[in-house]
Image (cartoon, rainbow, N blue to C red; front, side, top):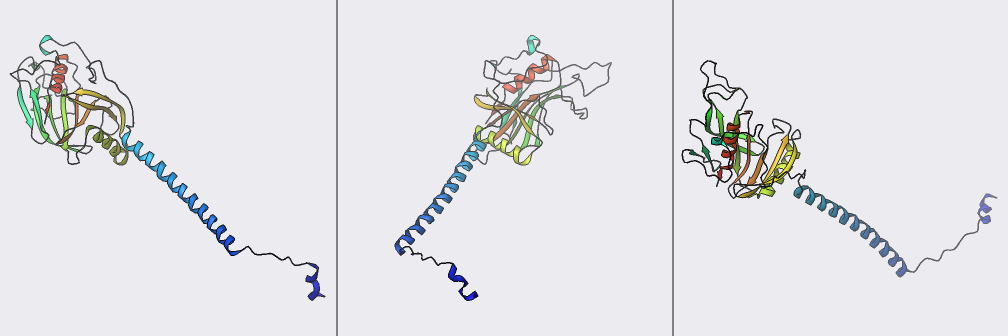
Length: 272
């Protein structure tokens, strides 16, 4: 009985497709698979290209805080200064100011003489202190100092060099620099800073970004927060054929004469 059980299920005869139709069908399937993977690859490449273009050419923050003259400068705490110390952007540096040059940074500073109105006389009845302006004058300093990818700092600073450092800075104009070995433009150097922050300095963020016209050139302006950065300090960022720079003018002094001289030193900087 068992040997005849399969007689109840009639067999079906299938006519195989001709060889040329089978080959065409297989070819079409292969083409569809190849086309699908090709579209996936093109999509990935397209999205990746857009991301790279956006990431490497677009600033993280778009903020432009220029004033009417196109110069972005943080306002002084006290804007009233004596006539002898008022900042005049069109005025030339006085003849009695010395010229101090940083060979490493290729930067020249104009330094006021050690006399009034450029010094704050010290009251002999009070002890010397590094946390006020008495007995201080403008001096030039030049030394290795690291800031992001920059490795040297030159500055004009209002201080009494005979007093120990306290962390209090009455006023200063600082220029950080490095050789422009990679031939950055101002824009590509600024993008490099942004990428460097993302890759190596996760605690430091760009707070604001803008532009300014200073020293006969267009520069980028930025404030940073996190790490040792003070969010109230404006940095001026630019590149020349020989150097890349980050410049700032800052200080805790509320004396309007000190502030005005600081701004004049800032505007009087010369770069190679």
